[in-house]
Length: 386
Image 1: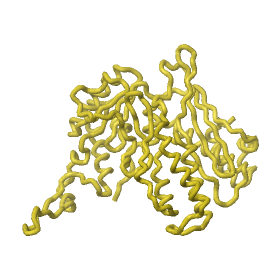
Image 2: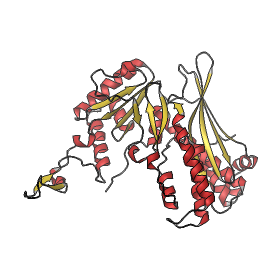
Image 3: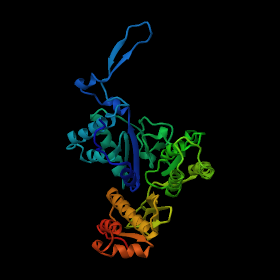
Image 4: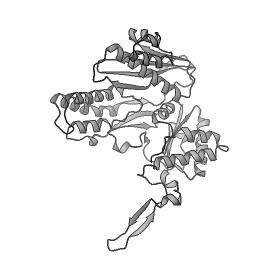
């Protein structure tokens, strides 16, 4: 069994990671190999081996968490959680980080000052050493925070996706210019174009923050067009869809030139506002959130935090209903961002340009039809829509 989820989701982790002035990343060296399995369970992790076909078979028992088993991620993460509980009294700050700022074996942490970053680096290292988890491949936007004797790779790039090797498009962090960028793996694209191959390749476009929302939604729309065409999984696709897919695939490498600042908050900020926007069309609807921060000199800085998009249903839906669905999507996105960010938000504004949607939101749900009533009732819990 895979076990329950006991760590923060990647969206929350990355959003919080982008709000800190000083950022540090590292990963645990051979994490699974550091966790012993109980002898009663290790008997189910046996392998047979011989160096020569003429030799007799030798039986080996794997005594540590084994990569490839369904429970491996949970067991390793659960071991980290237990370490945080056991040593929480001696390392309260590092223990808190251990519980919320790890994604499997990847550590993504940040703080406001250089002194805090240095202390946290040493504290988390000391805590993990007590559990036999050595940290390596340190990287930071401040080179002075990288330990001199750390086991670093020659690259400053860090994949923010644990399954990056199978992704067509993956998100990476470059610590030196302190930016987020995307790597494109065109070798993952199949030359045979069918409904099955297109769906498989679109599923490999990895963009958890939605920074490439306008691009990803085009791929989603293309998938919907395929479904409407009614073609089989391995049948030839219509020429119109083939042309759309070819153009999309041809332009995809341009995303390698796109990058976003990791830090979304101005240094020495004195005021922070959240501005969210929702909109809809007949093909799709979406929402995005920006952070507007003002520094000590009164200069405003605006950064895209995240976005989310949905394809319009196959069955026709009126535009006002799609606008309301977009507003609900924005409401949910705001709730996720607010939970992830550990900063004081002075003002929050969620915007919609649909007067019908705004009228619905200002109406009591019991006076509306079921479709609008359900969505308005959820939005009213936030009550920030203007």
